[in-house]
Amino acid sequence: MDESERSHAIFAVFLAVLMVTTGSLNTIAAKWADSMKVDGKLFNHPFVQAICMFIGEFSCLIVYFIVFYIQRCNWRKREILGTEGRVIELDLRGEPTLPNFNTLLFAAPACCDIIGTSLMYIGLNLTQASSYQMLRGAVIIFTGLFSVAFLGSRLQGYRWLGMGFITIGLVIVGVTDIVFDDNPKDDTNGIITGDLLMVMAQIVAAAQMVIEQKFLVQYDVPPLLAVGLELFCSAW
Image (cartoon, rainbow, N blue to C red; front, top):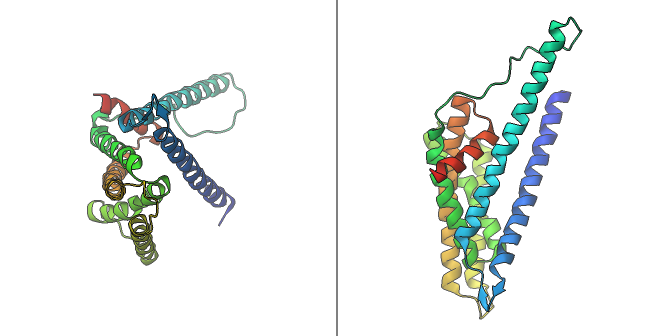
């Protein structure tokens, strides 16, 4: 492994750790909001929480255009220096341009995003935060199955083994919520419903990921732009 590959591997691990950390903080904050009382009533607005998530996705579009503008300005500055005869570092890349594709292609993953996010926040309102966070791991299983079925991907044996272990873990989480819940104030039926909604949400999220992967690869769409466009498709 050369230096470039090592740097990419370290960066990938960093992103994975950052995703898990921020995802956990997101879950804790959302569940904390659900436990708040205003005028004696609990905050029970999963759709409002979903809208806040979409507003966060819109910020990805802002970041994308800021980065795009900086890259274009740097490219033009290098072009001016080159025409003046100054020595500059060779850059074979052309002027940064926006990808040419139909933005409505992201209407399908946007619908999946709306449905999946809403189901997750409804499920979080019914079940425990720890179970919610662990059941989100079901997306790995369904994404793997959908990628094989619809994208023609081939998964190595160790990936199937990992998906099997995840399935066992999810079953343990679900059984624990039902059998070992000793809090008389908990609504067992509500917890079961919340867990099932979480699994349903992961099926929708897996479908979203597979569709996004197809479009990102086929049309070479930057991820930040794709996430931001889903907000506009959702509003449309």
